Image (spheres, rainbow, N blue to C red):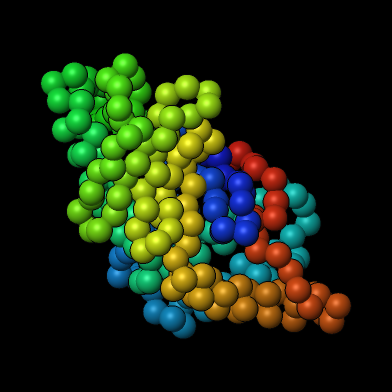
Length: 217
């Protein structure tokens, strides 16, 4: 399955991460769940990836490590993350009810939220509506400059997941930002210890300062 991952706004910590199916790529997007590793196990894996990155010999090797870092970060943040998966499903349910009997089955699997938005073309007024979601979220569907509707799900004062034409992105809550800082504090400390470069006093987050890349998942 094709995956595109990249940064669109590092100040708000937004990361584009989409599957070719049109679904969000949950491998990279943190969502509330019980962590499947202990803190010690997370720290060991973070340090291992940092050592591998510090000694990587090629861009291709570094790209593979980059993806593993983001996947591990998603798991590390899961115990403080909003339940993005449930909010996304709730948004799909809301759009299904809005489309009523007009919703079509693709034949394989469920319709994505983008499918429901596409089927809403011509219904009118969707951009003026707000849908209250289970879990305390709010769904809005802004009109895109290129045509059609986008989707923005807000919860806890941030856009926890949205798609406005460039793929699925998310903003972190204050709790996620704090834990993300812990993650990179461990990572860069180990990275510097391997590199032995005392001039590396500040380093950017992994992909949030890098161009979009394509990979297989």
